[in-house]
Length: 529
Image (cartoon, rainbow, N blue to C red; front, side, top):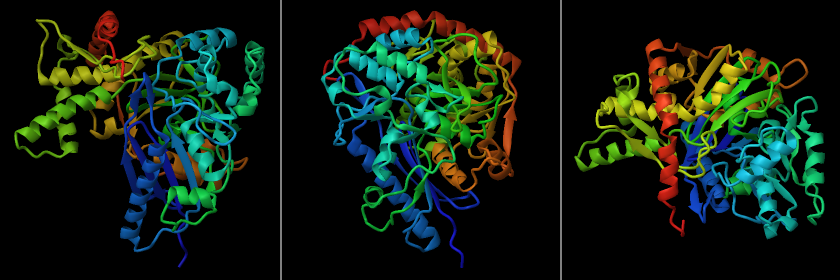
């Protein structure tokens, strides 16, 4: 009997670490997951690295148990593997591999000074969450650990390094560390040189290009699982070394792969703790937009990325309140059914959400220039305050900051999009978030069967691509002709009345930002936080 080719994908998301095993037909064989949450420590959103490995090991152990139960086999050998994680952030290490400062995630809005200076220096938008912004802010702050840096990377790059010993990064994830030149498929040489000259005289022994991970495009074999790496992944000792790994990628790149959105004039919107739109460009933008990042696909094509720090966290928190009420009332309702019930109710609300206003800002929001998070719910005495409008307002708010940012692409640059896909758990309730998003961006939105499977499946697909990549089989062609030939999707058109209603909500949303700013000014975080 011929053994199936096993490919493992692991993605470290904001609230969940997920592992997915697929076969040579790209069908899911087994899954595992681990719930986790970032912590606000001394004003920094972070995760402990011990928890990174606790979560990876737990999700892999659950997958291994799932595989064994289904196929009556112990999992010893994996042929291909890929690691994905939240993009951006800052993980800096010395020559001995010691972490020099707490992991600073994408969620932190603490690099405003660096953002402004670097954007001006490069004439290229450098958002606060980018790794180079964190590094330069540390330089501006004269942080002592800088003299000892030997390597800095993203979360996916860190995990890949520990598993393989290779200091590499997929080009999509690398494009959120430092600007990429799509022609050379490497870091932008001119900007590297400009940065080096800009920090001359500060006494650092390193140069930027020596401490960044090496850039790799999709289809490039990027190391093998070492024995030490196998033990990290599976402490039981049952997993063999030798698995071939693809370049580690960011969650934006795996979202593009999972929705077949790597070709020009295609795009996807990935909604979770944060939300971002990825639009593959036909041509360069005419100028720099502070709300638009220029990143790349996993194969190196230019992408306009609009990223908002906040999306579903506050919505989830409110649904948690309803769940708590049900528990107190002695009513047993599965979480999935509760979500479906409440989200579906939103479609019954007034198109402008009845005059209600919500901001789901658990953290600072880059697009609306809010340095910290203060979730708010506001209503006027005459507002139509009912459950349907309450739920609609939270869904509108989940997409609010993103839509403000996307106006530059759609209204000023006239970027053309042939198809756009919704991706993430919020789309599991069929026809609700998808319909509201279509009206919010005033464009058709499609959702695939794999929309809820997430980036773990996407990075597994990138690992599977290692078997197919050559000059004739581009990533786009592989997705079109190998992966998505039988995949069905459902397309929803914008509702003109809802488009108008969302515009009314957006006007209220923008006018109310002064309330959000006042809350930040007067409701201070605890000093111990």
